Length: 273
Image (cartoon, rainbow, N blue to C red; front, side, top):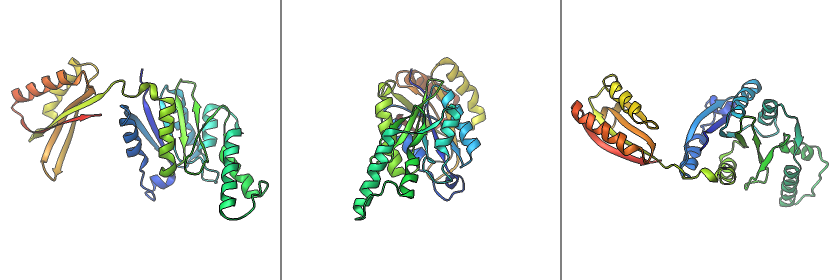
């Protein structure tokens, strides 16, 4: 079965509004391009107990989860330590990560026309970016070689840890999808079929929605009200979504019921998710 996909976004800068999150929309896009969908997203600030609790929930599930942010080596980066605490595993310097970090330091020294000094204090500190929970596997970083990491959870799922910088995070998320999730790509195409209803109220539509959802297992019925849409004004978008093979029958029942209901219908939209 295809697992649930989750997203964790770490950082005070997101919750304070100092930075605008771009990961949610991008991860939805990356999943949709492979016939997958995001099941949930969590935002958490730079607070170790909260991050640890969030990761414990992620590791306990059988989900595929991507965690963006907080894997650096400054005092406000806590994700690596919290991952180890959530797994009850020690932290250790990953040998492949250490090699990649040293390679990056040599590249920087060469670019700056300076000798590479592996024993210099700041270079030794940079190795902390390769200290991961025991048993972690690296995620390559095509931008600057400083890797992320993946960990298995006791619940059967995995959490993939990438930096907060989109230029690094997004190709790393793609790499993890291609290497760990390809068996689920485009296995169950999803479709969404909806219609704009003018002058309708959700309360009067609820019995219809409940009846269709009960009659069509695996289908989700949804309503999205709007009070000030620039084109349609006050309206409700009503629809069904689910596996492409299941949607037509549910939509036909909904469409017939809306005609019998005397609903004033506007444009229809079909989306392949």
